[in-house]
Length: 333
Image (tube, rainbow, N blue to C red; front, top):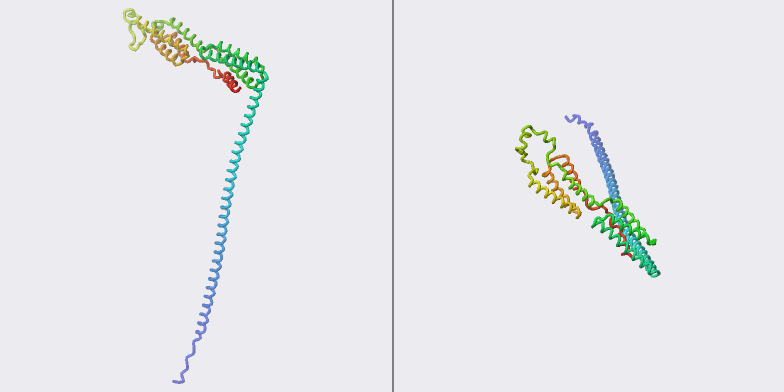
């Protein structure tokens, strides 16, 4: 039993120990590679963050610089506006000084001329007063009395007096031109509107007496046989007929119509356009009550309507411009 053989060692033990060492080496290599990769990745991230921070700082610096540039531009613009305003004020002051100097020079020349020739200066002033009086008379004749011919004569005399002034003053040249334009407007004005309206009203009043009192013949022929048979016994009229047939009614209506026409004539004399229209409207109502419908009546009513639209005052917007210019010239002198 002591001679039994001893167990031999297993050959796999050395290989197991060597394989574990290899695995440890692999693990160490993997861990070292991971740590190196992590270090590289963190370094890259740090570099990217540093680049981003640098970019943000540069952008902030650029925005701050652009804000400063905008502020400087606004300040420059304000300074330019202030300088422009100052230049404008200075230019206006220089122009005012130049105008005042020109006025003073002109006044001095006029004073020297008046001192050099007192009789001529006095005669010139009297001539200007006479021209102003003639222009005022012409304007009042046209506005108050409607005397167009008288206004034309007054303006012609004023133009003649102004032409006799041998003066090269530019203000007088402008006054002559204005007066010539006003005289041309007076010549082109035509007849006085008040005189035209009064003539038409007189013609209309005279034509009313010739209007037919009875209905036209065609209306009588169109009546039925029984109306023609009993026309002498019974007078049949419409209930809504306002025509005045009775002598007393016609006399009262004619008196009222004559009163309205007289009121219209008075309104024409006063140049009262509103009063003329109101009187003619009432007169038109009396026409329909005093005369039956006929072509002649319709013609007169159309004339009456046209008469209501006529103006009573001459349309001359330039009237008095020469007188105002002359007054301004005299006040300046």
